[in-house]
Length: 266
Ligand SMILES: O=C(O)CCC(=O)C(=O)O
Image 1 (cartoon, rainbow, N blue to C red):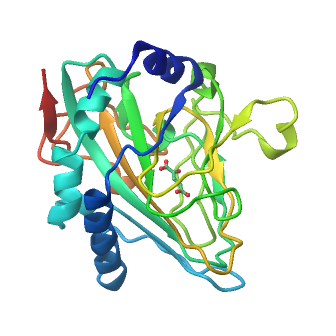
Image 2: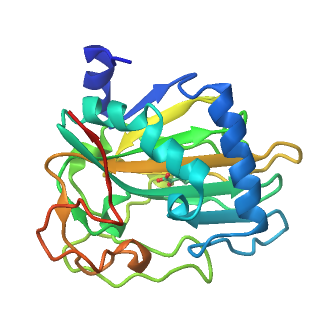
Image 3: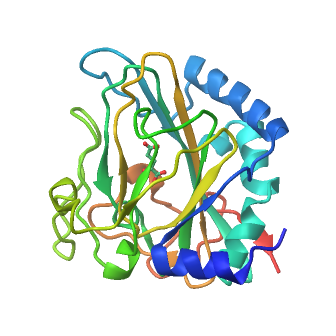
């Protein structure tokens, strides 16, 4: 599959593109089963939390390391090759994958943030593919993006996503997160009503967030895979998520390793 130059330009300018119908039904069915299995028997990086008012938020990451379906999707689907095209890269490392399930009635917004400050990764070639397995709308918590915000080059201080969530060390080089909701009128905030199999691809510095799932009958299963390209390297400063750090790597080293395997090469 070849992405058009127009779509690549859109990704570079906006920091996000919508890829409708990217993932076929066979993959969707396999992933749906793997997700149910993870909900029943969460892997070691489970990060769900209790939500006021009911519902349930199930989060987990690095799922590919313990589940063959997630692994096969991260390694063998179209995604690594697309990542290479979007990032003009000759080699692609899998950084990690992450699951975000908001059951109906889960008042758990995904706070506005950009991702890279949470990660021990520097460089521009860092991106994510967020897949929905449900009809996702603003009401169920589809992702919203601040168009072009990756070009601000601002690294926002990571904060816990909910009470009891992971805490993050302060990084003096990071800036406090902006109050994006207060700035809604001035900023260009974009989102798409998404169908199962649709994907949004976005840059590691693009500011994004989502509301909770306020519906009573529709789940919102989002599954993200994150890849790095040629100019990305390991750098672990204050504020990163400890579960994403890689004890095998030293500051400044190339990423390829057991934890961040090479999944594509020209
Ligand atoms: O699905 C969500 O609510 C959050 C997803 C997200 O922030 C991400 O994939 O980077």
